[in-house]
Image (cartoon, rainbow, N blue to C red; front, side, top):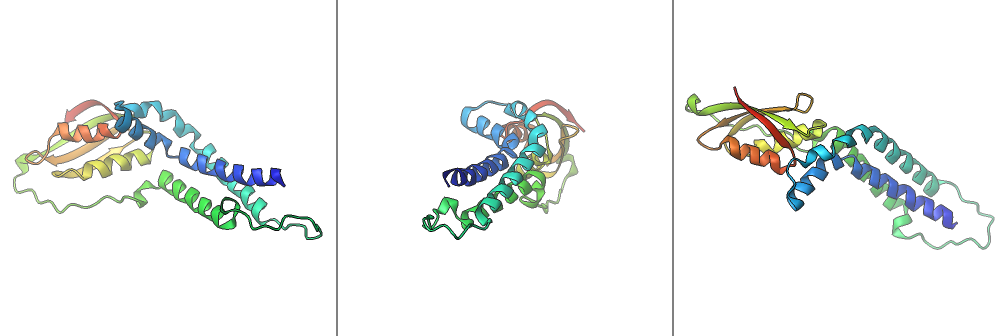
Length: 203
């Protein structure tokens, strides 16, 4: 009985840990940069992208085992069995909460655009001479989540009219109004997310 209880808790704990680890390549640099102040810390987490499929598999295998433990039919011919109500952390409700969490973390990791779609700005440039386009080479982007993270953050800057980021090419092309913002401000926002800008080129 004790082993069964341990298996349930261990399975759900492993599922949660694996699901959180799916986003560690994005959240890790953000924490290091904001808390410790380490610039360009995303490069230290880039190796995690290789493990994402395995972490996802471990998360759902652990959930499957937990479901088996919780929902399997118990023998009823045991007169001395413990029939006490299970604690919250061993209940079916908690198992389903963990399942929802793992599913949400999976969606956040693989389909980040669902959770922060690009806002369209109704900016009309009265003078095109104030519009500048810059291409930034960014080190540390490892997945589409990094793209969305940069696009979403830069797009919130007043004066930015368009941003297109590619983690595969390691670049971000940004169009902005020079009367409202500048390259240094844009760089500061990107670097605050833990990425390293290695080169800047006007277009």
